[in-house]
Image (cartoon, rainbow, N blue to C red; front, top):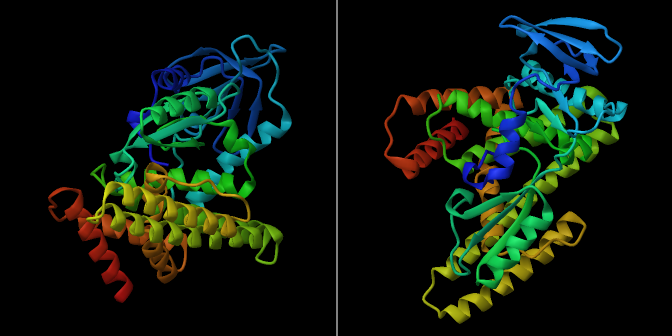
Length: 376
């Protein structure tokens, strides 16, 4: 998910700044070549190198140039326990996935996954809107981020009591945060791969666009397709196309595409209702009917009971889904994630060479480029 600066609470921002990019309190380094160095803390450093020492007094010297992709592990302030092997392996795996993404796909190795804080579970986010307002994407909504579910749900209830539609979700990762969440580590392998590639695709787009504005719903659609199909290509390479890992990932990808279609369908239906000339009471009644239908269809697709969405929930999902079908078609034509990234970079080059007047105009130019690409 692209970073939503206005959602970051003072507490979570302070945490991110405290962890930052320094090497103090580090007790594990993972270098570019994939080697692991456990339980070392920095005792000295200058502009070129750091000196680290483990609990037995052994010292190592690491060049700063080799720390571009380091992870440091920050335990609780009073904790001295070592990182367990399973956690260490998962942390190493995240960096190896990043390097695979760079070597095979052309994605950057980012600063998105360099810090692991054992006290950080995940970000708890709420969005809220008026009951008859359906924004275009999540940047158009009010929101807040919390460190705990309890805090988020308390605020959710307060806003609901004030008459707002409120949507609660957890946010495992962000392309502007260096922190690896426990939620990411504890997720299934396919989800971890998808998360890493998704967030690093945001960085690729930002770099390709030379930090110019890029519509968030296109940004998320490209990140979703790269994350999903990138994880499929990873499974094919590592386990083979006949493996359960590949087949399960393919099934998940198919469900994701169908889910995006459902979101688009019901967002458009609700948008038509809310913009109609019927009374507010009738709009609310029709909205409830549509959201009940959507919940039932999502439950059938996902194989488990899906929550009933409301305006901010549907908007949040639509931000990711709106252009997924179009970008998926571009992927099919390109034939691989690597080739899709080349298409993205070529598109960015064309867009940078043309003036545009605001998001709507730029969105139109992107649509025109992709439609021309698909018809060529």
